[in-house]
Figure 1: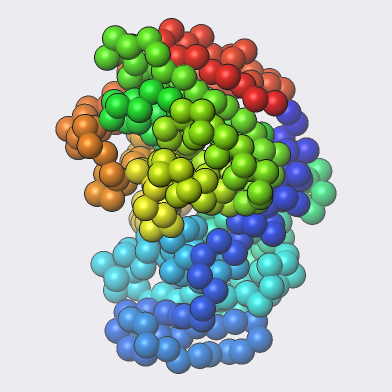
Figure 2 (figure 1 turned 45 degrees about the vertical axis):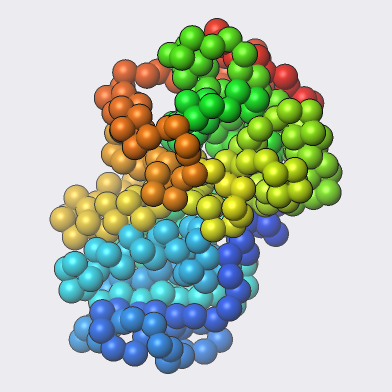
Length: 389
């Protein structure tokens, strides 16, 4: 699978689904202890009741430009905001977020300009939809630094990928949280699993492969031979009747828990699980708030990655010009044990397996070129995968 083709397809399909996952109510925040300010491209300042602080003489040094949605979306906006805010408040640095009017490159770029006009030295951009805006902004604002979360800068037709020294792109090792989720599910007593992915893009493929490997790893430890995984890519990142129907049929035939991996595809699994009194594993962020059926989530530690990036900027150690990968080694992934609904899998169990990942004692298989079928790449000992095309 070619990177550019994948990225283009992903951008087209995901733009309408992922960017608006959270709440759409207006809310805002600025810096460290006064009325908050939120700025959009259409209006300069709106006073709100969110916690904030006085801006410095030079304006707001740290800025977050939100993806569509708000900073309480329980997704990329919120995770990025929490990481930036934490560092700012610990170090008494002024900060603020800005909301674009539209989910377009022009609107994002205009809002980035407003943040810089407002004094921003570092702008955080959460989500792959910022890849093209940051590609343009890195040249237009050479004295400003950018953190691009879950993406890499490229031009409009994906013919050029370029990261300047003032940009820190952040990606995640998705197979590791997938592994933890599969491992925990089997350790907790589930042996009939499902992986319902969205489009077969690299991040989704890695999540699925890791999930299967984690389940098999746990099965070997426990000496059981009957772990089964139903496995499918829906081809989109939307919640559809077809995805819900497939999830429902899996549950009807004995599947106990489905890893819903790919934007709103997870909502289809949750809807089916609610009807069948079954379980779901969430993705990217803690999705326990989405449905009581969610027993855990394979998470990207968004706030940790942004906090570390902001800290590096102020430590004069900004890792610009190259992509930073967050994994178990730098606590960039994990399961939300505090909200997980396990009955047998304990915090001690989690700490032990996480440490093995962190120390490099577990090696995960990477998908082979142009392949997304785990039955081809993975040599599992105790786990049978039924790949549904």
